[in-house]
Amino acid sequence: MVKVLLAFGGESPEREISILSGEAVLAALREGGHDVIPANINKPKELLPFLEGEAPDVVFPCFHGGWGEDGRIQALFDLLGFPYTCSGPEACALAMDKEVSKAIFRHCGIRTPFGIALDTGDADTLLDRPEISNFLRAGKRLVIKPTSCGSTVGVSIVSTANDLLAAVKAAAHYGQRILVEECIEGRELTVAVWDGDVEPIAFPVIEIEPQSGFYSYEAKYTPGRSRYVVPASLEDRVFKEVQSAAIRAHLALGCRIYSRVDIRLGTDDKPYVLEVNTIPGMTATSLVPKAAEAYGWSFPELASRMVEAALKDAPLDRRGIVLFNADVLDP
Image 1 (cartoon, rainbow, N blue to C red):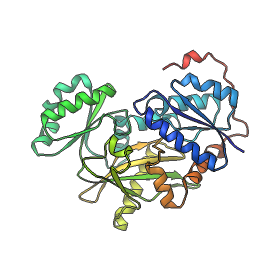
Image 2 (tube, rainbow, N blue to C red):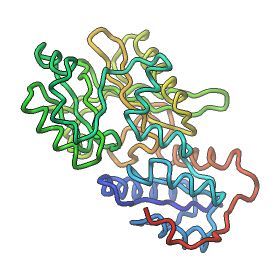
Image 3 (tube, rainbow, N blue to C red):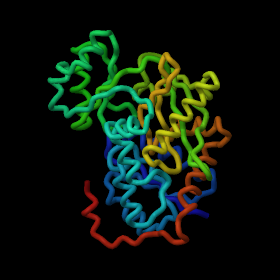
Image 4 (cartoon, rainbow, N blue to C red):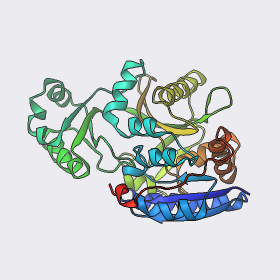
């Protein structure tokens, strides 16, 4: 029986969702017959007693945001020699920084919305930028978001100068850098990508239809606030193009095992990649389990496959030995 350390919680604004993901994955792993040790932690050093005392075969991180998803905790697992069920430090860091990942998408020829990143202290100069003022004068909407948050935390959609400045101030509560991005009018899609034996596999495309407004934090995590169409009703050509864009984004950032790629489908039927999630939500309303089910995998099977994938290329004994003072792990 594989011993799995299920790590969740953390200190980010997404802590509550991380706990919900952890609880859902705990049930799925136990249904799959795994020996699971749940670890609801606040700080990274709190993991050390679990790693040393339990000597798990694999770690299943369910952190969302902050040091749990930006590559820092993944680097710790690598340093200590514990296999884990998500992308490595580099891919996690790139995916968490929307400014950097957007630059990589552009470099790789992956279609992504126009956007400008800036320090929150420069917000007063935003309207002096002709590309921004031109968007507003043309009646186009803009999306304002922190560069390093998930779960739609701190995200606003605006169409006026006054709303833009208010949205920038709201996003500033979640980080020093913000992204002002063109709002692609069209349809909200997401694609889960799985690393197959030979090449990545795109699960069926999901279309998200919020009951009102946009796909906000509340629309994501409140049952009944959004409708999910699985698989999305798209022309076959468009369906495959959306899946291809998701796979390309997954590969461009160097993701492994799995990811979820969020996409807007424009009115021209062209997919625009918004971001890649290296530890997407795994709650009862989350999208990766829905996509896996549409592909033919139950939630327990998905969770078990993630554990198997983490162990697949690991040496027979990768259980680490902690040799340093835990105080150095305080972020």
